[in-house]
Length: 581
Image (cartoon, rainbow, N blue to C red; front, side, top):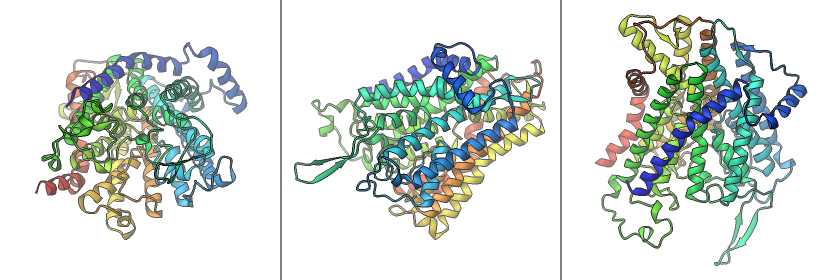
């Protein structure tokens, strides 16, 4: 590992860790309706919104009512976005000479579901398909709304764990409004200004046509890139304005913008662990979850960096005399010997590995390199990150309740070993709670594996493998359904996903990954909220200790291995073994 990559990784972890406590405290004050520095600006707008929408902020909802509002909000966002996409040729800022990719009904439906579930799976080229109106009023708006909805569900989940003898989890519309006004909008404004300062475009000009030195005409897309770019990261969405996503110099012009965008993805989900600890009255619980997340994150980062530097195909490559390594090259600090296929020379292995690990661990499909070109084991780490269940930081709100669900499973296993009724945060995990936890834990393998099996055994599924077959093609299909279920949105580019089969099956995976996980989580929170806290005794398992952290980490790895090891063996592991021969 070269010095540049090492410094970048250490600095990234240090900044995230340093901001966990202040950001976590700020979010706790926002959702507890305590005074904040933005109240003077946000409170009048909040009151106006409640007046217009006839929402009573003092009325709280049961878990069932909260889940119903969350579901209906997602459905309404999907239908509205679908209508915009189907009618975009009649709406402003549509350039028929440049927007040449038609939006078929199945592609429009897939895209609408994708953005309303924060998956932002893109089976189209943004600059050739979407008008400025669709990008801003449709996709960008859903990035804000869907991200805020996820944050609201996460807060409601924490309330259920924190409250006693309560039938309510808060008010969905209040939590949604506060997430937008106090967190996402200010963060997006500051982030967009920073990106514009670094050269990211923010305009509504027609596409520019330039004449190259060879005399060839080249179309240079324009548009409100900065506005979409920051919220796709801050809201853990990931949909790129351009087909090349974060590898496009308009979206991600410098190593500094790449670093800032990765921070935007991780900061809020990481700080949410501190919010959790504060709201349940046990800060050490939040720090334990953060440490487990950080451990898995660092392990993934080290492994991806190693596998992208060390590959059997590169044993005879000597990069010492490479032009990219010359002292006069401005990007020399970013480049190291390794697998540069599919990677930007502006970023090299170091920044590409950081981006890939950050985005695969969160619900953010942004990328600055082509994951299809990663080594077999490097790509496997990205796949495993998503198979873990979107809990290493994860999405807004979703990462926290995914980790808590995993902690509940670890507590249950520990209880079985010592013959005690399992407890978490003073709440007993009985038969009803166990049903919700098992529904949550089994949802992923019951969706990902059958859909993958159908795709690899039918002509409609195999027709998407236009370039790669064999183990790599299998990995591409498994990666696609895993990414959609994890509401992530990344893909192996060699899979042609713009077919009716993939548009419909990936849409199914997205919806289950969004609502099929959030609803059991809210149900569990409601069950916990009705209980009275049980006082700790000598026999109570301390869930903030190093021993429990090791148990939780082991439990996570074991669950992934038991569920997906055969599939991984048929894909990336077999590909690596065949390559070794």
